[in-house]
Image 1 (tube, helix red, strand yellow):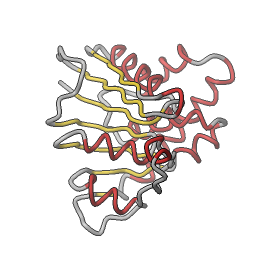
Image 2 (cartoon, rainbow, N blue to C red):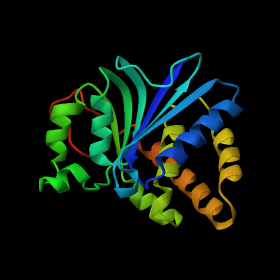
Image 3 (cartoon, rainbow, N blue to C red):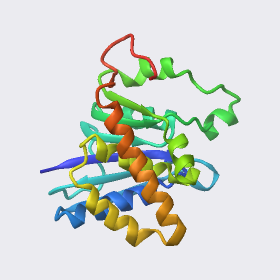
Image 4 (cartoon, one colour):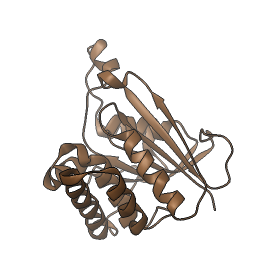
Length: 210
């Protein structure tokens, strides 16, 4: 079995931590994993992407032809990740907006969701997730990455199970942080259970943000 995941967001959102959690959980399930990361101006909120390739791969970067899953922790960065491939099976998109440096430098407004959808999102099944709210409910805005991992687990689109992820969380976060991230994982999984029948399918022109 082979499976490609691209994680995208901005510096400070825990993209690399999320990639490490997914990679280690997949290895615990007995699968081969390659992970690579690309930093923009991460210290100043620049773009960060991580590729996780599960299976018998040799190259660390996902090819432009297709990607099984995009996990985006910021709205516009999700669409940028989708744009990078000819085909994306599923995209999980945190609806939080963080104004990119490129827009700020040129004094441009953040694009409307509908415009981004029309330009980049057609043909991809997209789940918009208000992950920031769930992260705050769990106890920290920094838990957005684990919320999104929980969403993927709940939708059964990860080639691994929740027990492996929980093991890695226990090995990654100490004390209070573990409790916060365990709660974030639970909230993401629970959200998926409620939303499985409410899918945003961007192959329809009338698609709108749930």
